[in-house]
Length: 232
Image (cartoon, rainbow, N blue to C red; front, side, top):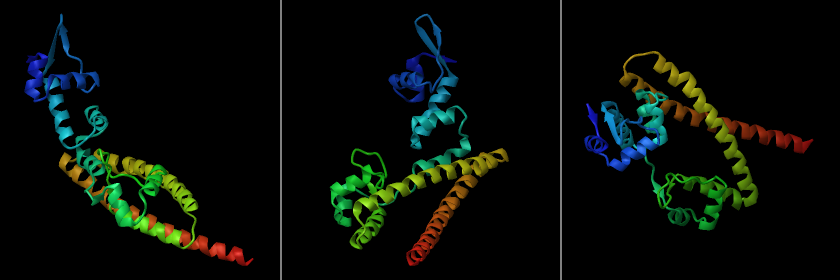
């Protein structure tokens, strides 16, 4: 069965302009042309329905393209959803964060520009995880103890850059040695989806525990070495 663009749009439940937009982005294949008339098939309709289904899960067009091109499996959907839309924490506006933390808004903006404060979403009014209050309180304690704020911010930027590189490497290792292994093992899509999500959540928690413990041990060792050097 073939459809003209108006018929296809009506069957898929999307506006005609949306069909053209997806076609322009390469998300649906080009239609068959007959003179000035374009004809679409059931393949186009299935593709539009799949795009709409993935959009309803909150995926971006970039992620949707990877699903459509087979770079991501259907069993990846729950994992991708957990990554792109983690369980929503309490969030605060910048003014609310300033009021509850006691840190002036201009300083919070400076921290954000330095990459030390990151909004939880990209809405018109950015909102920040309430858990940032603990980080800000810890930073204030160090400043009150006498650590110069510029030096503290520089240390924070250095740490953030190091963590970014480590996190990217960890994601690559999970993808290569966990995700690909589970999907290569076969079995049902539901089992693979459940197993991937379970392992990701477990490893996320374990990684946080490991990093915190390692940093504390390393910090103590650095402090001991500093004391010993000071004595010599």
